[in-house]
Each structure stands twice: as structure tokens, then as C-alpha cells.
Image 1 (cartoon, rainbow over the protein chains, first blue to last red):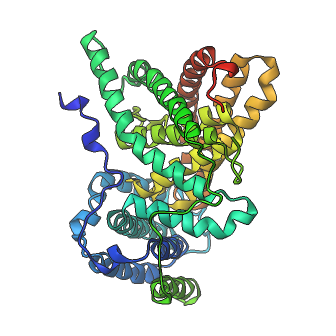
Image 2: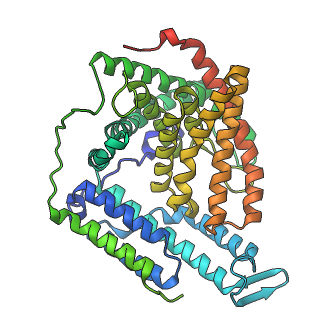
Image 3: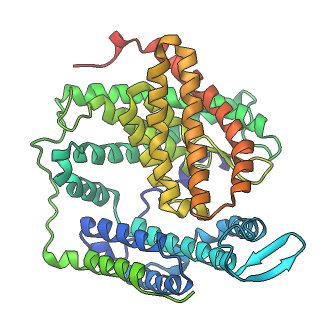
Length: 279
Length: 181
């Protein structure tokens, strides 16, 4: 019956309370610092730079007191894809990617240049680094902190018609709806199964698989839209008028000290982009 | 009721429930259809298309952005751990689908929904693979092959789901039956 237990696999909103400094940080500062760090990882093209980044990410995992195995649990299922990607990059890029780079391997039509080897290593390192950054962020931030943070950070942009409050509310409702949808989908799958329907099947029967999904997906969409209509009535009946003039139960109070971490992240980003790393 | 930010209560709620479907499809892996090539076809972008058709380009863009953020934070494949590939292309799925639907609406509901689903899915496939090539994850030849072998089945599935959901929904949900204060 385990194939009907959809809720078990949903890890969104999972929080690992270790009480570390990162857990206690102001969510606004944490969001900004994470964005800067993701920028640093995404735009560092050198091997030396990525070695520094790997070390920095390990430090962040340690700072969050999150077990390394837990932060990196996404690596194991990704290994086949990582290998496939590396093979494709090694086989097919050839001289097309940076023709001036020296050839390190040549056999028949397969040409591997030093630049392509570096590319393979950098893509793999970047994946591991981003996995650590995003794991630490999601495991150390409660969803309520996240939505408060988004709303607060977007408040100054309200004059440019960026609906910060509304976006935060959308994220809240969306996260709240996921378990409701999972329960409904379980019901639909059981209803199908009790009438002889089957879910699943191998890689080669993908047409069949898709056809089996339809009797679940179509009612699921209708269910979600219908629940949405009910929620709209409920909100408007209670005179919901959006974010203007609204006060909050939780008020984020941050001092200048909270912004030291994003400042450090900004300095780090600039250093990563400016410093001449080898490789 | 229109709030100051330009998003109505309806816009907020419909964005949220459809984004929840995208997250749900990703979290339970129901949204990935394994294909013989080893790369999964996806239907996770369908909520963005449906949102764009039902409530316009802003709602479509929000659903796409949440779908992109989710796939970035919870990705287990290297290409989608890159924010430029995971988030940016997804913003445009709902926008292009909404524009296509609005442009073709006069030629009939079925035509407009079909065209919007095709455009929305193609936006996802072309932009994701295009950014993948630009960021040197994929050689152009491989991207082109993947685009043809996965893009076309994805389009077919997206059209079927969009038509089934929207034609059914629009039949019950006449404008005068909608919740409105």
C-alpha cells in the first residue's frame, strides 16, 4: 500500500532545529545572504574559486550544525545524472568549447580539451555547493520566517507596484495546500485502484503511464480550483483587502548586527568575482 | 476586490492553489514521467499554463516563479541546481501561455487553449535547454535531440491535461457563478 502514501515523501517545509546561529538569524538577512552566496557559486568559473567555495559551504553547514550527510543527502540519487552529464560534456563538446585550449585526450572522433575537463569538474563542484547552500537554508528556516522575510524585504518595492504582502500570502497558501492536495490525490489513486486502475509501469510504457495519470490529475486540478473558489469566498466574506495598512502579529526586529552576515556574503561575492583564481 | 498591489483575492488564491499543484507534482514525483531515454519528461509546468489561461499573465508568471524556486531548492539534478536554468525560464511559461490564449480567444476556446498549452510547454523546453547550452551544461547537439524527443511528448500531454481541466472547469464556472463581492 506504500504507493498510496504520498504525504510521506513531501519534504517541503522540513526544519531541522539545531538552534545554531543560522537558525536564530533574522530571516531577511538570511535570505539576502543566501541570494548573494548563490550568485557567488553560479558565476565562479575557475577550479581554484570553486575549491574556496566548497570550503566556504562546508563551513556554513558546520555553522548551521547540520549533519553533513543530511545536507548532502541529495547527492546519492543524483550520481547517475552527474555521470551522464559528465560523459555528454566529455564526448560532445570537443573543440567547440574554447578551441584554444590544449587537447588532453584524443581517440577517434572523441576530443577532450583541458577546458572541457575543467568544465566537468566545475559543474560537479557547483552542484555540490548549491546543494549545501539550499539544504542549509531550507533546513534552518521555518516557512513562517520565510514568508515574513519575503514580505519585509519586498516592502520598499511597494511603490513600484510589487505586491510583497500578496506574494508572501501566495507562498503561505501554496505550502499549506500541498498536504491537502496529497490527501486528495491519495483518495483519487485509491478510487482508481479499487476499480482496477493501475499507477506506475516501466520506463518503456510511458504512453501507458501518462494515460494512467490523467484520471488522477484532471480531478486533482478541479478539486484545487474548487477549494480555491471556497477560499476566495471565505476571504472576501471576512473583508480581506490586501496588504495596505495591515499590521502583523510577528514584527521582525533586526539590529545592524544582523546585517553583518549579508555584508560578509557581499564581500565574498565580490572577492570571488574579482580575485584571479588559478584554473 | 482589487488590492493596492494589483493582485485581486482571486489572483492570490488561484496562484497559490495552482503553485501548490506544481510543488505537489514535484514532491511526489508524480509530475515526472520516465521515458526510455533516461531523462524524465515533466508536466510540472502545466499549472503555470492553466493559471495563465484562467487569470492572465501576472498569475501565470507567479505560478511559474514559485515552480522555478521550488525546483531550484529541491532539485537533485545538476542542471536544475543552477538558478538561471531553474528559475528564469519558468517565469515566462505562464506569461506566453496567457498572451497566446488572449490573442486566439476569438477563434474558439479549444483552439486557444491548445495553442496556449503548446506555446507554454515550448517556452519551458526551449528556454531551459537554451540556458543549459548557454551555461555549458549541454552541448547544442544533445540539447536539440532532447528538445525533440522530450518536447513533443510533453506538448501532447500538456495539451490533453489543459483541455480536459479547463473545458470541464469553464463549463461549471460561468462568470456569473464565480465568487465575487
